[in-house]
Length: 392
Picture 1 (cartoon, one colour):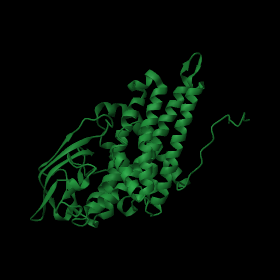
Picture 2: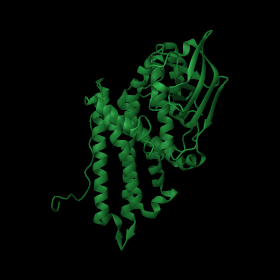
Picture 3: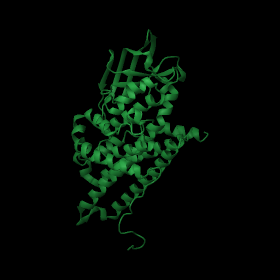
Picture 4: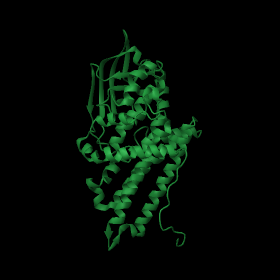
């Protein structure tokens, strides 16, 4: 029975394209893994500022690191929608740092080798990455070159049999633990066509990584990497010499979409936990969720989450269809990252003093979400892209 058009219970959620029943089964499998093997340990890993490499190995055993890769390479033969499920379910683990470390390996650092690498490079790097035997990191940002990729200064000089690399990379997720670094380097002049990509084995002499402390994402390692006369064999050139800028631009779309998917799922998890709290916590003799002001905050958050989901799924549909989804992906990234921080802040406010305490995990969600409007392209850059695409 409904009173004044207001339902007595929440409606059940239906599958939204491009997701199917097959993806629902995968979701159940990944969610079970997250709940059993990740979530119970995130508090400890956050305190230790590290999660064990065995997490990556375990995910390799379960087949979660190559969902979109062909079976002959150790993958599951799926596509980007399968990996989208992974992005959403990892966001429910309770530690954005853990999700970021896994995501950087799966969705950011390994894809360029898969898309642009030779068969030899795929066998040497992608196959062990899918197995969880070698962890990957992507090295683009430098102390003086972040958003302005064309300003990067890490230099690769041609030597007998390959290149000698000198320079620095910073804010590199997985930079300490990585077995190989997919790095943008300057092999030519100052323009975009002077940038190339090299796959650098991190056990080479002259490679040093130091861990950076940060506001959030505590379970992940973020590194400052120093490269001093590091030798890279010529067979580790990724793609064409001078073609690195195009490679960077191609990789951004999935990275940003992966971030948007994770942010929507993260908002939903924060919402759910706060809803439970609001139904249990009492003030003035009744659950705080019964107060109109609180109900309206939940209504606002629900609207924000569903809007973000709609925008992000539309971008995903176009991306999977092979269409140019730059506009949709950019909008999704811009919309969801700032919203994730705002939703976490609202959830913290509803928790009151409890939200400021570590034990509830809400303060962590707020700290972790703050990186979203910066990483993978700042809000300002997203707006610049949208302005250009609008003809301005």
